[in-house]
Length: 217
Image 1 (tube, one colour):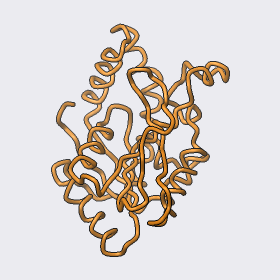
Image 2 (cartoon, one colour):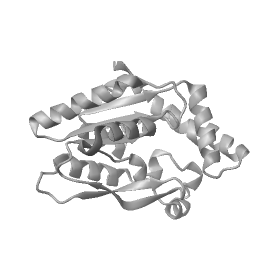
Image 3 (cartoon, one colour):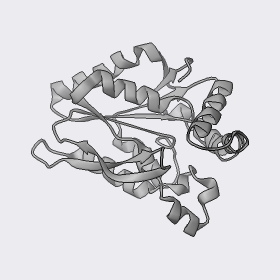
Image 4 (cartoon, one colour):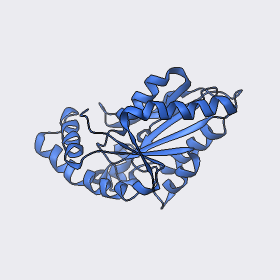
């Protein structure tokens, strides 16, 4: 069973992993999983900011398939489900980051631009000398399909947990903030997002640590 950690202690825990990397001379990989709206992106961004140039954040969301591809595949109405990502590409990137040597050229990772609701290639530079890579996303702890390989790439994986009512409120507010009308925002948060949240919740016990988050974004 995972141990529990407060959000306030998360930076200290990440520093411990960073210290291990510096002592060993070997990069460490930290994963942060959680349901949509749990606060994993906010936590990961805070860790990366606090650790400065010794850490870099590479979100799983950069591997969203573009809307044009999802429409062609008939999956646009389920955007955010596991099969709406390039999971194999994400695993391949983690493998490159895991095996990078100090003399290697930088790796360029994609990001997800919420203003466009689209992935952007080559947006995040990961220099080989950076000792800690933080990656966050819904499906880091899945046991089935191509995402199952993700856990093997990580030195530690945390699961962010938040009260369900707050999580749903955050999601609805986020969808409205990025352009959905209130009714559509609610329908999406309580429809596709909720289906994905149930799937992610079932992976909780595979985490090393559960981080409790209660404050609003």
